[in-house]
Image (tube, rainbow, N blue to C red; front, side, top):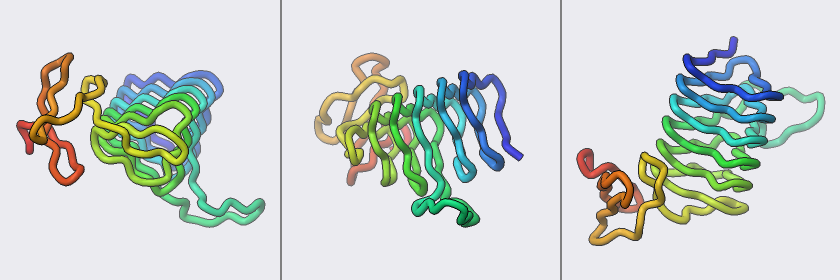
Length: 160
């Protein structure tokens, strides 16, 4: 009962459990297990050996259903060996640093790193780290897209 979208790239030694939803154009690198309760939207990148969980209190031989839900939104990028603890939502185009342990929601375009993961900055939808805001406006040095920052929420300037 798993669903895998079109034009996906799933590497060696990956496991996709039942009831998982994977969108279109998703890349899942080698050694990743995607457990029941995880939904991955379109155009997401999951780095090698990233880990997902689906149970906050795993006890051998005690199965608790339904499993906790985890949502990875469109365009997010999860670095190698990062751990996504169940119940978290990773926002659109967010970047998760390699080895980070994410236990809380990550905002759209947020960059998080560390153990536990903490918000360290903002990313453009093209993947480039955005410079510090000037008057709550951030401009991508690469693609020139502009974003507005208000109350720790980043939105494209044309949608703000």
